[in-house]
Image 1: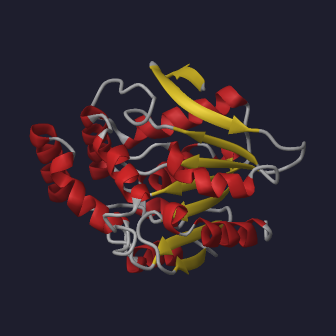
Image 2: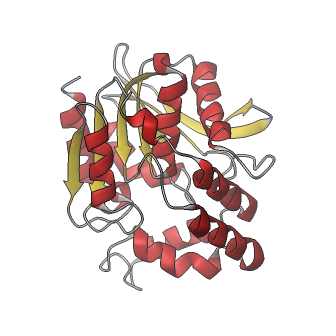
Length: 262
């Protein structure tokens, strides 16, 4: 396991090398998950690309740190990790809040970003009342109190079969997330808004969404794609909020096609 002490928190990360000259892809995960959500994507890309993935603060094996967070905290952590690893001009692939972090990183440090792959995300996700209600519930009753509703938005009905061991595993990943880290990141999402920045993105961008995403539905991701100059837009069939879990082969094909145009 790999850890770096950055911005007063220990960040858990993983790097996978590649031959010299290969592009670097950096993966940022969703709220209530850790970097294992990318496993089935990474195994299909390893060797052709150098890989960096990490657990944002309050998730996985990374420290929780002081809460609540701002989106600047999450952006600063990724910025510091890439500086620590001496990574520049990376392809930043972020899902949900990871996609918001990716947008924030580009707004702050354009030298770190060669291209953006924005999965199931938007410049602004949700509204103040919704995030405040979620924070209250998880703080008072735990993440399990909201798990059923969250998982319905994350996964298609066929994936949510009681006999599907993977589905049980992702429920465990969600409910075992630090309550403080989860609620802290909800606060960061509540206050983050990169709507005005979308039109200023000057690197190639791919906007991807599952056709059955209940958290950031296709129309929201399409609106983001229209706001980003020259962005590509792809809908992945038979997938919810986490196409990297439900349809990794399709997602990898879409990513490879996009990266091939850079």
